[in-house]
Image (cartoon, rainbow, N blue to C red; front, side, top):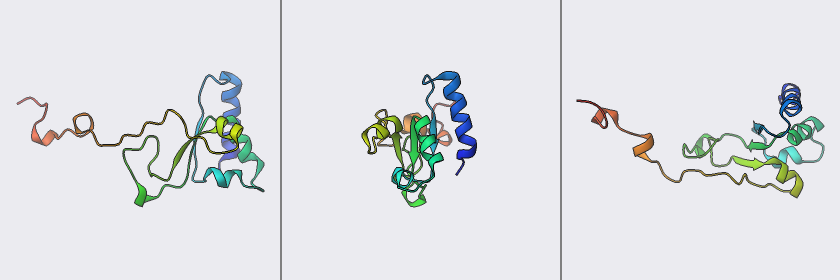
Length: 118
């Protein structure tokens, strides 16, 4: 819905940096919705300028704080150039979601005095 603002920005980034900078985009639409027949051409033009698309609506019941770059498990991180080239969704190969909560890194219980001075 924001292609009017995002298209000029993405064009400027490509003009200035070429493909040395990755452009990410988050959308509530799915890839399949964006690619369906009759969709507005500005959406396809923006897809051709970006590298990574995080697609799908945030669904509170599917929230998972261990996911990389997205909030709910239905959302995908899509490699856009490869997906356009292959005519199907290609998931970003650098995806590495956590599979468990690691308390020693993220969840130290400060109230229990861990790591604190007495």
